[in-house]
Amino acid sequence: MNNQNDSKLIFQELTDRYKDNLLIDQELYTTHKVFRGLRDLNGVGVVAGLTKISTIDATKTVDGKRVPCEGKLYYRGIDVEDLCHGFLQENRMGFEESTYLLLFGKLPSAGELAQFEKLLAKCRSLPKNFVRDVIMKASGKDMMNSLSRGILTLASYDKYADNTEISNVLRQSILLISVMPMLAVYSYHSFNHYTNNKSLYIHRPKENLSTAENILRMLRADKKYTPLEAKILDLALVLHMDHGGGNNSSFTTHVVSSSGTDTYSAITAALCSLKGPKHGGANIKVMEMFADLKKNVKNTKDEGQVADYLRKLLHKEAFDRKGLIYGMGHAVYSISDPRAVIFKSFVEQLSKEKGREAEFRLYEMVDRLAPQIIASERKIYKGVSVNVDFYSGLVYSMLGLPVELYTPMFAIARVVGWSAHRMEEITNQDKIIRPSYVSVQDNCPYVPMEER
Image 1: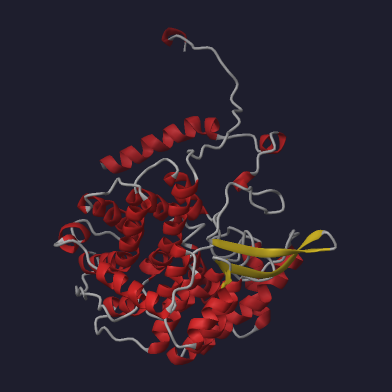
Image 2: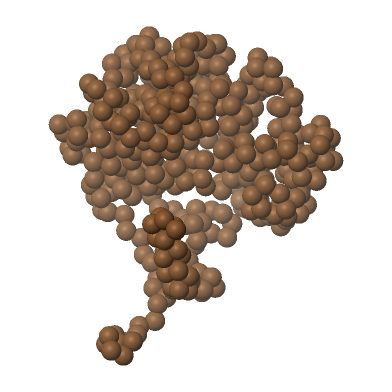
């Protein structure tokens, strides 16, 4: 038995011995009126702050009562559907424009946008030998850990890393927004080379290309991509950019920023939050679930057979036996997730270009059947619909993105929202965020060693 196995057994024994000390009587949460997950029984989040960055609407008032409605997402008061329609109609990329909107609170003029795009392009540069000395020195399969390490290391190259004046935080934010795609893609190439024994290539970004175009260019050996591919990746980045102040990683940014820490540490904390499968890794679970569905359903065009599989998921008889249909439901939305609605038509276009229409039809079938089955099987306080993660994994798959980059793609987009929330927290708050916890541990006397 090797040392690692010995160590594992020791820690398992210690855990088994003392695990009762970790448990809290679940009824005490109700007794002390603690909102688990900072949400009440109706799923409404506890108000912990104010924000002007983004807004979510999932209910409306009818006859004095709050009732579910079609979901809406607003960036700085602008409906995201209108924002996306605007740049798509004019055949423009939207990531840079939307970044400007979230950071500065207004839509840029043509001149302001051009100037901002040049600034982002200028900042798309890592320190000399950074790829060799940092990214390639300790490559691993977890790209989120690689991103965290890369961002923390960048602080060592910043003469004013600890300066929290807004102008300096803005400079740092724009730098991180610009280099995050490079850190993610280069970390993947390093892992793919050293772990998977594949060819190594490092393509530099081009100044005249958008963020989405550069991601595809840096990722692919031939640097080639279609206009539709770039447009859909750009749309995915815009839709993932922010989601109210209460999502886990944005709230983490507020909490950590309130301590007065530096930008690199605050963004790394947000990354660590996003890494969790309950937050940023949800689309991977959707892809794994569909792989299991295809493996266990003989005819995936038969609605009855697909419906039977979905019921097995709910009954904990299929896939990971957690009782969940991944990609269904949201903490806030009930009738619809506007991001999924916007995404869906473009997913269909891409499926035609990639020859994967049959796969899209299967997703569409589950999209239609799952809410009905969940409603018939379980008592739910609000409606259930697909969320953005339901389709985003399929999109990334059709774009040829490796699964290791699915959550980093989320981070590449969400770093914009984190940056905006960090500046908002620093500007408006001067108190550290410190919530209250109720102690349910009884006091007990100290026992001398010889009496234990």
